[in-house]
Amino acid sequence: MEKNTHTLWSLRLGYSVKQAKVIKKTSLESFLKQSFDTMVSPETPEFIQSSPKLYKEFQFICRKIKSSKPEMLNERVNKEQNVSSFKSVVGC
Image 1 (cartoon, rainbow, N blue to C red):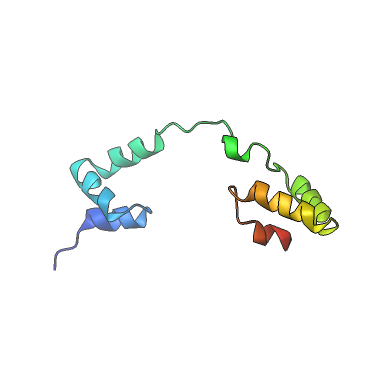
Image 2 (cartoon, helix red, strand yellow; image 1 turned 30 degrees about the vertical axis):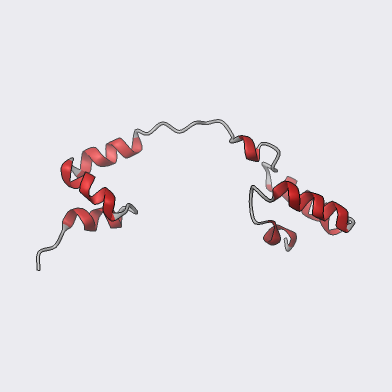
């Protein structure tokens, strides 16, 4: 049985089998260079602009929620619903 080295490298590097075809067409070196040359926007996405940036801010919010009324908890859960699973945050 012949080994498909392109698929093997694709999976080892965390890519899918679909990218193995691209690796086969181009070389592994050029595929990786192209992957790392991708431009990433340094701006914070709009949906997490109001989220805490520091761990201390996060802790403050957790303490505030634990000592607050259920209405505030529901308000905060609604606010964070699109950002993360807030059920794990309440248990902090």
